[in-house]
Amino acid sequence: MDAVTLLRAAYQPLLELADEVDDERGWLPTRLPGWTVRDALFHLAGDCQRALVALGSPTDEPPDTDAVSYWSEWKPGTDGAKAGLRGTRIMASVWTTARGPAGLFAETGRAVLVIASRTDASSVVGTQGRRLTVDSLLRTLCVEATVHHLDLDSVLARRPAAEALAETRRALDGLLGTPAPASWDDIRYCLVGTGRLPLSDEERLELGPLSERFPLFG
Image (tube, rainbow, N blue to C red; front, side, top):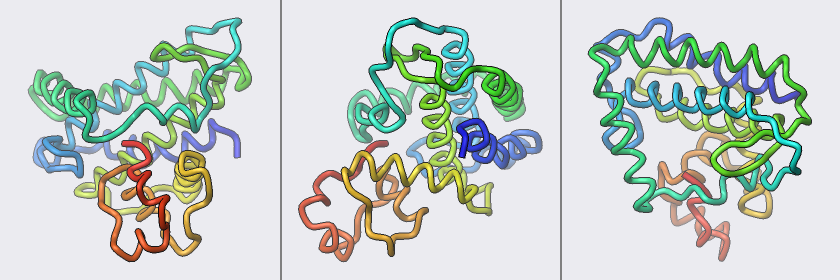
């Protein structure tokens, strides 16, 4: 499936949430320590702003990153990850209502989908000091949105789109270096693969030495 279609499927339920979320639901907790719904929406808006900058920053140099290797530097529990959680919480607190970050994400998310659909998927762009094709960039955004969809289960009762979950599984398998057991549910794999939940004893036994590689990113 092309990357724009994947990203649209991943963004759709999040954009619908952003259109309707109110202050009461905006203060509900998420899976991420210290983050409320409004914090997660602000973070998603930041992803979209970064994507718009990337799509407007083409380069003639070859890519040095793809949709899987992009995640290799992101590990939960590190000082950098903790600082990122705190920084987002501080910046999101500037908004006086949930409608601020929600509206920002709704606007920028839809803008990303439009601009991405008009951009050559094979062109190379820069983001966060790395270079990757537009196709890879959009796939990383799909994975990010899918994982944060699961973080927002206090306000999003439905599962992420099947195709978005499949793309996230593909990224996790790439980082693991082999497919995870087929018996693992996509959502469970996403949660343990990104450090939202720990591996069970049974899962560790099934994985063997590969269990030491978890979480794969976060």
